Image (tube, rainbow, N blue to C red):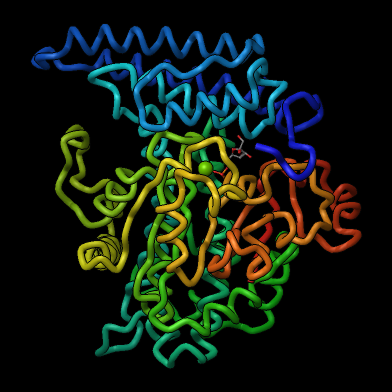
Length: 510
Ligand code: F6P
Ligand code: MG
């Protein structure tokens, strides 16, 4: 915890760190109280542990209320008291680096991670709630509100477009091989979808306005996968699926101007560099360090599917969080749950009140079929081990990714990840941890800002780190890799450009 530059901190009243600590996190914490309250009030009378569960829930509510109080009054940090395997490491870090510190005095990154770990403590201290995810209902609601975009993409990805064959638009694009124009075009579209899928995370939308979520997704799909601006809205039936929906046949001028408009929002874009790496892979291994559940995870599946179908990868390793983290981050259970929603038409017990047997309930049978086909295909990747979901305590520790190669408790993780050909880091928090959440000048090269991971052969401890890329929409007051003059220009255009999620970077360390 010795950052190479001044760390971002809540002490700066003009920072996003300050407004996160003072405004956003108290709301997030309050919602947990509401969620637990709702959950224990809906316990069934026939539940043999109802009494104990109620008592424990009241205890959780009390602890979470206390946590909110400590945060709002900037009380000193205290050691953790539960029995999770990471407790000792956390308490050691607190004692060593922050013995007398508090929420606003410590680095923003540490305070925010500590908050989610303290939330976990309140549940970990119980018998009946220790695996409970207080953010699950929010993840579920927002994923459901993503139906139009989810269905629209499923139809585009699965519907046969050539009579007498089973070939979808994507199959057509990649069937001519890794060096073909189609495969290349599809790659750039996948990258855009994967990047902008990060715009709708739940911790930024402290009050998720579902219409806003839908609007963001509509914008994203219309500018990255289709020349038809209303594609995500139109719930296209099979008959309306044309080759232009993945850019195969498209008015070239219109397509170019769309991409250009969108490309303006990517302030540093290494996707050509990424493509040169990806196209050299044959049956490689790609690791995706996941960010958010819901729509973002769905589009992560889409790009993972592309890498397999195009023959670049034969193994995708998805890294998830072990504890509820930054509201919407993927846990292993979210991963399987998401697949289940696509290919299980039977109601699960929690869905029994719903009138439709489907989580998503498009009325068009072709759309239902598309979801089912995609869900089955992706489930078969998991069953065959082509896709793996793993998790490690490191991703929810207080450490930045500078520590990945050398930290004593990450050796197993690092050894495994070194077998990979490409690491894809998704989202804002992963970016913050890559660059150690510091006040870097915006023109600092990305490879410099990520420390050992960017030093290749020059740093023997980090030897074997493959090419890595970060797909990140900007939601914190740090960004690197910009050309001279971009910061000044952006300050003129939009004062909140670093934090409002409207701008992005695709940064590669070769
Ligand atoms: O709350 C702070 C923060 O890290 C922001 O920087 C960002 O808005 C959010 O949490 C997490 O974003 P993401 O899901 O993209 O990592
Ligand atoms: Mg997240």
